[in-house]
Length: 124
Image (cartoon, rainbow, N blue to C red; front, side):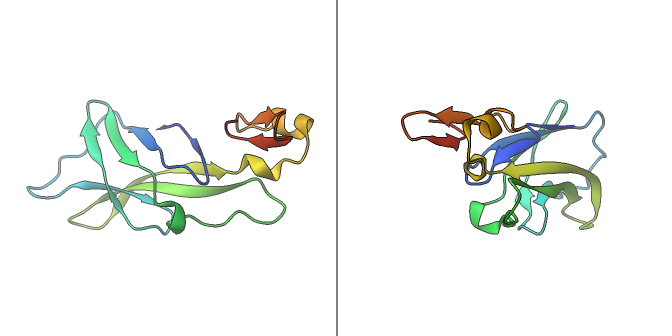
């Protein structure tokens, strides 16, 4: 499980990957998170899994013209073997793709209609 499983396309965030039992790593090896084709990122080990900062904004895929999100595989990689052993999807979304209050508020992304700016956004 990935928490949160959705992040605004232009925002950095920390995601938690819940893994009940992490495999033992060899000495000096580490876990890395890989968001699609972005550069692997060091993962911090915690009691019930891993914490990872999301990929840099400039390394994220673009969202298609008629869409409001893009799904990216989030994988956990062993730095020594360079093998991925867990993969889940993470959505990068863009509230500004919604052009009406109704479409904004019924989106799956938790968007908000900003009355003063007359636009849909992740925050006002």
